[in-house]
Image (cartoon, rainbow, N blue to C red; front, side, top):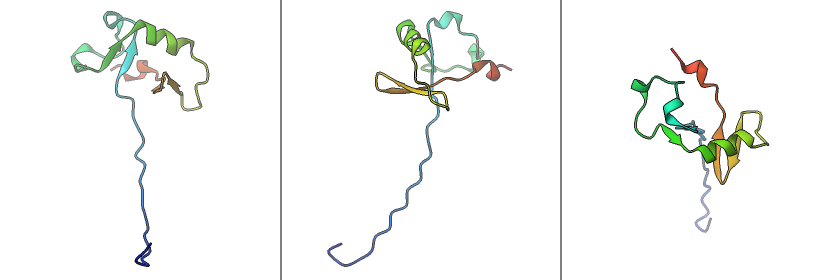
Amino acid sequence: MTAGQKVTWDCVWFGSNPQVVVVPSANDYTAVDESMLKNGDIIENSSLYSKQQNATGWNSNNDITVDGYKYRRMNLKVLQL
């Protein structure tokens, strides 16, 4: 630095968590009880769903980037109560 000071930077990476689920049809989505869902929790897009189903290159965390967006495969049956 010009002033001769030493600067130390500390960074913390908190990661990211899946926020919504992509489904071909919201009417057929039963993994989470409807009373627990909020507006925006589901993306109903059969084309995107099909792209994800046919995508190759999922990493060991079940993550993949499709069209510039990161997605994670999850077993939603675990969430059922």
